[in-house]
Image (cartoon, rainbow, N blue to C red):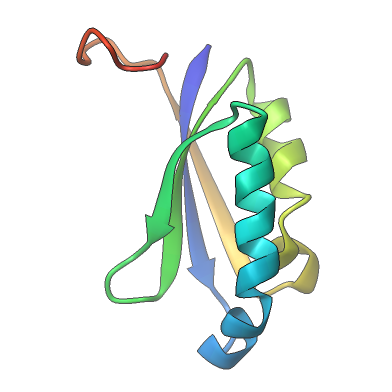
Length: 94
């Protein structure tokens, strides 16, 4: 398993983002239930968001991103960074 930092950058006005926010949160809930996501939240200032995911490979992450309503609507760009954690608390869910 690897961890992935998914960095979202909004490419649309916040009114468009807000109109899709509940669909996006529902998508996130589904990904948490599937055990793909570990944490997520908006950037401050609100220019996008950050998601921490755990997956077997980048393909799994890319497939999940393609289901995000923000991606479908073209209101966000995504940058994905894979990393292999070597230090973490004992109870960290890797």
